[in-house]
Structure formats: structure tokens, C-alpha cells
Image (cartoon, rainbow, N blue to C red; front, side):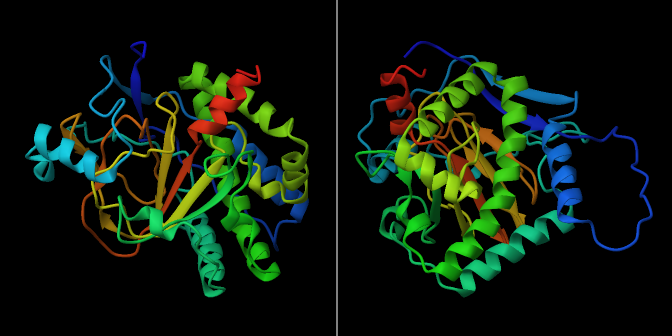
Length: 321
């Protein structure tokens, strides 16, 4: 694999001017809410983004058997003190994450409310047994992928639910879609080559008739070019692992929500752990980087937006990339 830079994105806005609150009466109309959300998505990021770059990408797991046990063996062999990594040293006004997503309590609580409504309906898990290599707590996987099927389609957990569950799921997915579209603006500015691949893959997805119809019927599942699916669960992934379903050269985005403390992103290959708080985002090439979360206290909802490697590979084979 040709050497590439592996960026970790960071963003903090300590110098942003205070926003004056406008007085208004009553609730916004649906059209006004749509315009407000669209404006928020299109704002992208501020100019004070910090990029943390590794000039030699970690290659400890490249070509390794897709085995969680093998990843843990590699971690123990190469990084025996990985459980006691130092916290990433950053200035007081910066952190290795960015605040362009639902950082306000109101925005976070809206998403958490949709998640709570969904979980009260007990949606069916189809992939719970496959999460054991990263956590004792299984995640749901929603959106588009081609990992476990001969053709790209909505995940089984997106499709095979009852009508009320699908309605609640789509309300949650609509909020996460807005995050994903915001992240696309970040990719466009800071990761232009990856953004171009995402756009081409998005075109491939919409060229598939059955999938284009599924996304037309359920537009909340069309997350845009930054990510094509998302995993969501309560808690964190406490076991050292890599994300085998991801592409080596495409990032995923971790978005935790809730009033928790701890759950730092531990990365033995980089030699430190990265604080990440509710409503912030951390981007990494999770197929290359061995990672796990520190223990945490408080309630934490973990959202991971990702693109599976088979989807990108098929887009390339079809001439879209």
C-alpha cells in the first residue's frame, strides 16, 4: 500500500464570538426548521481546525488475519503497556476532536430522545454475535453496506423491523444524516481525496435500481458521501480491536453523546489516548489503527459513522472511483 498521511481531525472554537439570541414566538414551521438545519449543515467548519498527521501510517495490522484474538495478541506483543497510555497533550484551547456536530444539550437530547423511543420498541438484533471482538455490548447497524450480501442494500437491521420501529428508526436516522452531511463538509475541506471517493461511491449507490428505490422510500437512510452506515449502542468498545469492515484508506467518525466522563480513545500505535466528550467527533482510519475506549461513568450513547470496504471496492470495479 502506498504511503499516505493518516490524519486525526481536531477542532475547537474558543474564539468564536458569542451568538446573540433572537427573540421569537411559537415553534418554527417545518419549512423554517428545514432551512435552519440546511444552513447548519452547510456552514462546515471554522478556520481554526487542527490536523494531527502521522507521516508513516501504522501498518501493524495490514494483511493480518481478520481475527479479534489476533489483534489482541499483536497489541500485547508490540504495546505491552497499552492500558496505561498517556493522555494526548494539547493546549488548553484545543483538543483532538471537533465541535461541529450536535454539541448543544438540546441537539444531543433530541438524538438521545429518538434513540430512547427506538429502544423501547426492542428492535431486532441480527449482528449481535459479531460484536464480541470489540465489546460486551452489541451495536445496531443501520444504513447501506455490501459487507454481508452479494449486492449493496440497506442492512438487515434497517429493513426487517416492524412499522412502528421503522418509523422511530427513520426519525433517529434523520438526525444522524444531518451530522453525516456536516461531516461531508469537513471532508471536502480537509480530506479532499477521501471526499472525492465518497462522492463517487454515493453515485455508485444511486446507480443500483433496487437500492435507489429503497433510499427514495426512506431518504433518512441516505447519509451522503461521508459515510454510508452507522452503528449505535449504549456504552463503549472496551476491547482493543480494529474495524475489519472498514477500508484502509477511508475514515470513520465516532460521535459520542451524553453526560459521561472517561471513554478516551486509546491508540497504542500513536502512543496516547485522546479525550472525546459528548457531542464532539473523532475521525480515524479505524481499519489501520488499533483502538479501544477507557472505562467511563455516566450514560454514553456511541454513534460510529462508517463506510464498508466492499462498497468502496465495488464502486471502483464499476468505474465510479
